[in-house]
Image 1: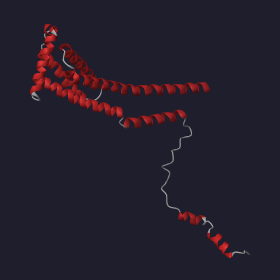
Image 2: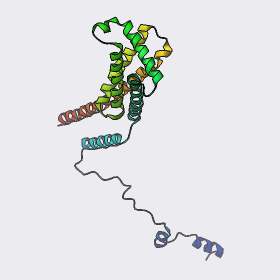
Image 3: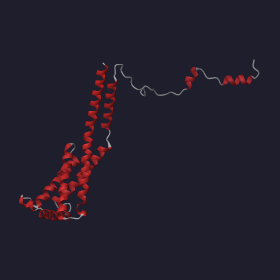
Image 4: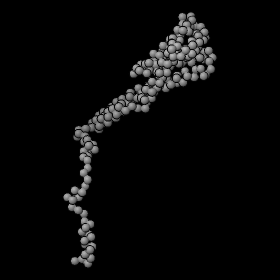
Length: 224
């Protein structure tokens, strides 16, 4: 018998509910089977696990466009359009008659500064058409053609820019007349270097994987 009956009533009201009532008060939850990691088979080794992780990581990296790839695509498109435009100006006056006449005058001065070109039968008109055709062709390749031809076109355009810079220096033109050739020559160099680095990266990863597998095999031989 207790001295305070109201205290016993308070204790009985604060007791925890039974298991059945507690389960009924819970909110329905979503199945968590999909959140659980898949169990590995009992015969799975650490080497197979590492190879599976590397393969999944490589597939995810290939599906995602890296900033390096985006940079190469953007540079290829912009440089290609620029050189198609510049080459067309050298070949025809349809885009701009003033720019076409300026190109004719410039290449006449280049031919005069290089008397050796006349000896081999290269006139100012032929020199202008050769460089213009190279710029148009390589610009189209940079813009539209995928794969290795882009790098070949990049290299040819870089040689063309070096030749144009040489011509400007030969006739003594001021910097403002060949600043565009200098800028686009630098952009072509940057694009070529980025493309080469992106090609060498998968080869390095493959060599690392092969080295890792060889080390694992050596460790197994030593343990056996």
